[in-house]
Every structure is written in C-alpha cells, then in structure tokens.
Length: 140
Image 1 (tube, rainbow, N blue to C red):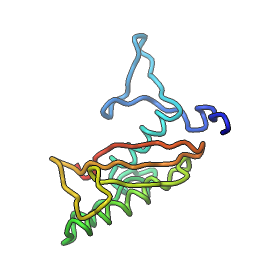
Image 2 (image 1 turned 60 degrees about the horizontal axis):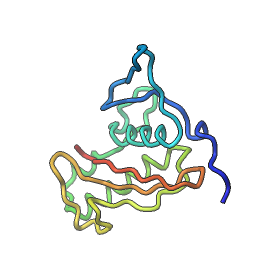
Image 3 (image 1 turned 45 degrees about the vertical axis):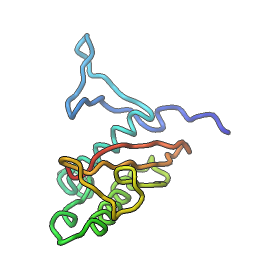
Image 4 (image 1 turned 120 degrees about the vertical axis):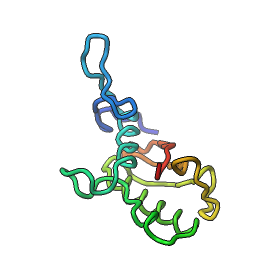
C-alpha cells in the first residue's frame, strides 16, 4: 500500500464552525487541511442550495424537484441520491461515491424524515484512494 499523499493534495481552507469563521487566541483565522478540509468542503456543497452561489452557478445540492413534485418516499430518495452524486462528484478530490444510505438503510422506500431533514451517510473514495464517510442531513 502506498504511503498517504500530503494533506495539501486534499486542500487547505478556513475552518468553519456552524458556518462561522473560527479565530485562534491571537485573533488569526484558523485553517483546516487534508481530510478535514475535504469533509468540510463536501458538507458545504450539500448545505448550499443549487445555483445560489453567484460565482459558481452549478454549485450546491438541488432539492427543488424533491419538494416541488408529487413524490413518494422512493422517488424522493432516488432524486436525493442522484443529486448527491452530482453534487459531490463534481469535486475533483472525489474519485468515487461508493454508497449512499438514508438513516442506515440502502432501501429508498424506507426513507424517513427526522425533524427538519433526512439523515444521510455517504461513503466516498478520495483521489488518494482513502475512504471518507460523510454523515450529514439533507433537506433541513
């Protein structure tokens, strides 16, 4: 097995805490790098509404069809799944999306909304051939 790639291959960014920039004790912006940066960046892609970024018109998760159409649980889950693949797959650091589970279930008909969103676990293979598990909620 080859040694892991340097963290800068997965990028460096500004650390966020619930959408807010994080400062250290000396009032400098904190950074995040490597896997933590990729995890944060992918979560931001999911939390951003598709087309809402004025500088990147195709950035974000498109859930309009899920909520605008007369969809049952199976159709809604498939639309969420397809849009997650599109959204996460456009990040150049993502090599493969292995699995998307809704609240621990691979079966879309068992999609159950919890509070203000659907719990989703996405298993991703990064460009450094490592597995990354992203636990998030969509539609909340």
